[in-house]
Image 1 (cartoon, rainbow, N blue to C red):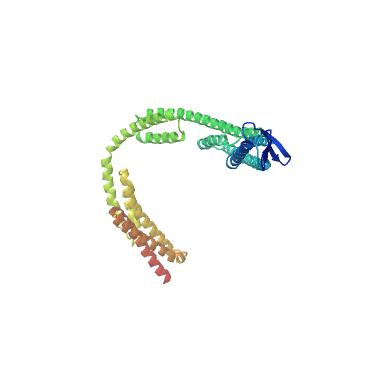
Image 2: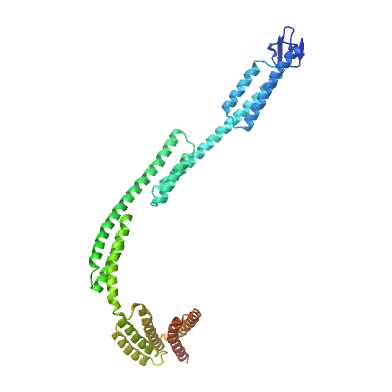
Length: 409
């Protein structure tokens, strides 16, 4: 008979394993010596140890499910309970008990994580629903439509909830998308109707413009074209495929008329250039009134010049602002001189004389700075014009200072 701290072999070849409940038959051995028998059943025990080691590592280091882990534990426990190995079976049972607790703990942790994930998914879907319902009221059709499509992709990437909750949230989400789509379709249907109305209106405007293109009644026809242009802008845009063609026809009709008018007006250019030369002479004569020293004489002289000015015909359009600006500068100087005279003789002017002189001084300083800037930029024409205005301002300043001295005297 051969024995070991955890088992023995009797003379008949029966192998026993020692447990807390006494000896249990592990098996029989007839093929060799008792020592070989114990060695064989101890190797089976070692195999169980290896399997438990592997299972413990899998539970700790992998995502082995609780169900699969429990099934593996039960399988090992059956082998241990069969007593077909020699070794400390109670120690193996204890390890399996501890592993069972670990698996159960992980089961609860996974359950908690799953519940947390479900709650997070619920909140995420509720947020998606709230955003979709907000977008359903938007009139930013393109941006809102793209965002709603993006929300669908986000929804698909979220875990499902319980069927009732998921269905309810999806119903709200889907309803919001449908409401937006319905409003968008209605909007574009209305827009299509408006564009069709605009197309019909612009067809009529084109017909009117084409009918006027041969007119030689320059003034009224040009005014009518301006009215047609205002009506065109007010009509709104037609469909894209019609808008460009309609505009080309409308603009083409105007071009025919205005080209013909330009050819006729070209004959008038010579006369207008002569008128410009005459007005330049009058402007130079008016500018000689500056600075104003005798307001009454300046006013009378300017009135005579203005009457002669009005008797002269039109000048070229591009020259009109400059030549009229020169006369206006003299007129403003006379008006300012009149105002200065009135303020000087007005009882209330005494209180404002000091402030006026300061304002005029600022204006003179500003004009001087502008003249320097114009000359630095090489714009002698602008500098000359500003010098003319400066002369008027300087005259007013001199008068204001003189008046101030009179007030102070």
